[in-house]
Length: 425
Image (cartoon, rainbow, N blue to C red; front, side):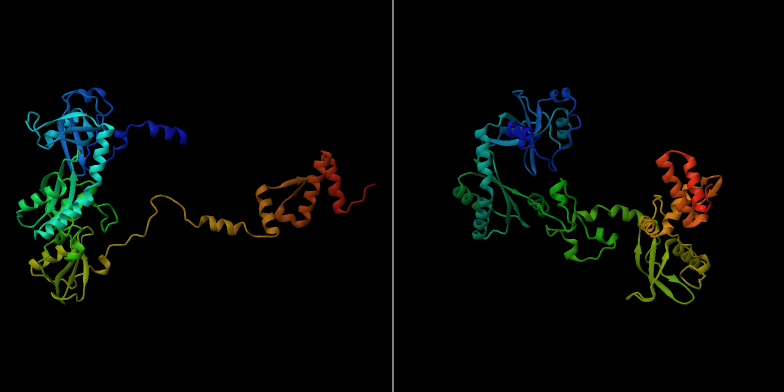
């Protein structure tokens, strides 16, 4: 089996080995319909983690998902991976606002040759060193910007510098210095802090890969109100992600909290009772429980009640009635249900108990086995393991032994008479 898999890997084209899944890929749910891949000459080509484009296969080359192709660049050519073909490309173009008759659409030249792939890998190997050197040049020019990533074109004749800046930056002098230093055409692209985190990647405080680098393709602004709705402490160190911005996951569940809050009473209403006045302290939205304090500033005499009780007290206060206590009376308190085993499984210690039951020594264990086996008839008399005791047990053993050796019930009877003390004539 190992030899077969090794041979398959050796025969696999280089283009197929480059195929990998990432956040920009679209699931091809028409892959099992061969006729759907010949409906259009447009293909989707992806270059790096956050850059992809749509190209026209005017020469009608047979392309499949995972093929490395050389496409038209500006200038020269670029090397990318085919991530989608057929009918779904038209749907993706419509989704991303790319028109089919746009003059900016470029062509697919050919499938990447080994020479093209060598240049492509060589250009990729220079990206990190180029980024570090470009950062030093920008620092020497006193530019308030950060170069986050560098991407070389497939033929190595062009480099895209991704940078972050809070204000507008005049980088005309920087482009001249970079062009002289690296001898390539320079293109500058400004990105945000979230896009930089998505390009670099990392592990979040939840222990999983960053959402911006794994599946998120568009970024929505996150406000501190999302944390307030979820009753999260407004601690900047805990709310900020690796991009130093508010975490994108704050928006994931805020809608559920907003909907749940609409079904709860207002937090601004104070509850009046005969013994005190209670002010809202905190709320558990999904449990529908609200905690009140007798002081606005500190947590004093905290009382947790259900939301239905709060509605009831508010209705009584509007009528001018003050209940004796805020919490529910003992006779009205709902009965708490114990844990119910809905799965129907037995106790986990059932095997331990059975071991203790069968672990007894001596005649007791033998007596239990004889009880289960029932009664044994011998010469018209009934003998049981419980009634006859050890003597009856030995006589039964003797009967069984004689029966096995002679194969006759008479021998067993004679043996039984000898045991009871009778003398043969």
